[in-house]
Structures are given as structure tokens and as C-alpha cells.
Image 1 (tube, rainbow, N blue to C red):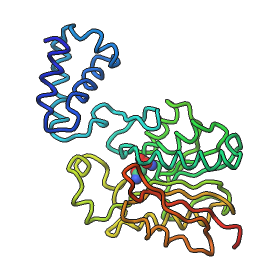
Image 2 (tube, rainbow, N blue to C red):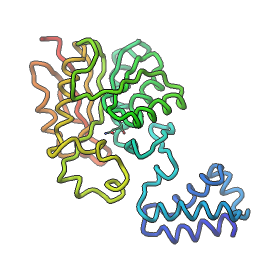
Image 3 (cartoon, rainbow, N blue to C red):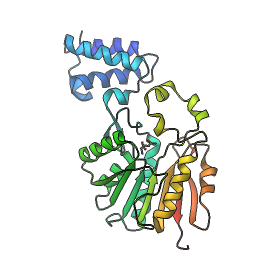
Image 4 (cartoon, rainbow, N blue to C red):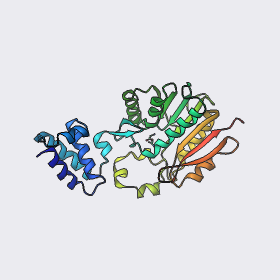
Length: 286
Ligand code: GLN
């Protein structure tokens, strides 16, 4: 079978998944170790039998609902590759808004090259912390996660993307070993899905992504609440707090930010126009 023929029959077998033709191409590239340009340029070459056998296995995994990112072992985020596995959530495009917002605010403050300190609570694959550190090498970041498997991936992703970071294995719902008022930026994409919503999620998410990275407790607000408490304690006056949340949690997250401690509290939208992240600045008072 030629590469082209393999792609056509694979896309047909993946018809019930999203983007079947693209998935077929990416699987073929992955197993052959080539990029899409090379694949298209040499589409009449034969697929060796042992390669076909490996592809068969990957096709079966995708057909059974396993997300492509886990099969390929990586996902692109803000233009960089991030290794992912069963210990890490797959980075989502909506999380890129946190990056854009943080970069923009500190650029405006003239702090792009300042040695500012930032903290990423619940770093998972490290996509947020690694991207910030790679985009702004002068910044000093610490990435926290309770899962040693996730932290290992985050370290790997920092190394492969040339980002310098500190890592801490810790539960951010408990006191963290940092000086109060010592960070310029606290960023987080915590687990925020309620048990009820979890039951309604796609099987591809429920069956393959780590539940602990998605569900903090029955209500969904348990970790967002803990993250606000940590940010309130650890941010310097004027420091920025950015936290992703569910599209129905905009008001609940703004309410976490009491006016005694926070100013400029508002909700950022994702590309679908839905409430997606909390923006707040730690006040100079108190
Ligand atoms: N910070 C990581 C991400 O944005 C992990 C988030 C999580 O596990 N809840 O993908």
C-alpha cells in the first residue's frame, strides 16, 4: 500500500472521529518520523509492513476514543510542543488567553525584561509556566503540582523548550513555602469542573484525561477558591492574578475577589465569547 492509499483508507475508518484526514496524516508522520511536507512530497512511496502493523494499533486506539495528543505523546501550545501523558491534562487553546494577557500587561508596565517572580498553581504539563518562561527569559517562575507524574512532564517540557523554572511538588490548597507578598504574577488553570458537569463530558475526556486535573470536588469551585486565597497571600501589591475557570463560573470567581484585597476585577472571554478567566490586581491597601 502507498502512503496515499493508507491515508485514504485510514481516514475512512476514522470517519466517526473529528478531523479524520488530518489525524490519518499525523499518525503516518508520527510513525514514519517525517513532517507533513515530506509526507505530501513522497506520497507514492510504499508503507512497509511493520509500519502498517504499528499504524493499525494507533488507529484502533484513536477509534476507541483515545485523544490524538496521548497517541502522539504531545500537543502544541502557543507555538511550542508539550509532551503529555496520562498524568497531564492536554493543553487547551483557550488557556493561551492567560499567556497573552500576562505578557501584554507586563509589557505595558515595561517589565518584559524585569526579573519578576511568577507562580503557576497546578502546572500539569507545564504549558503555562514553560511558555511564560520561554517567552520572557528574565522572569523567574515556579511551577507547582500535587502530582509527581505531572511535575516530571513539566520538567521535561521546560528542558525541551529551553525554559528555566523552579518546580515544587505541593498541594496548593495547603499553605505553600513562600514569603507573603513575594510574587508579581499568580497564574492558574485549576481543576474547576463539578461532579455533575464531569458526568456530561465527552467520553474521550472522561476515559483518558486525569480526573484529578479536572474535578476539584462536588461543586467545582473548591480549587478556584483555594487559588484565590493563595494569590491573595502571595502577590505583592499591584501583582496580577489570572485564573482560568468554567464558562458558567465568571460571576462566582469575581465574587471570590473581595474589594478589600483586589481591584480591576473582571472576566476575560475565550474565542467562543464565553466567560473563561478571572483577571484581578492585588490592591496596594491591606
Ligand atoms: N496548567 C495545566 C494546563 O493548563 C494543567 C491544568 C490542570 O491540570 N487543571 O493545561
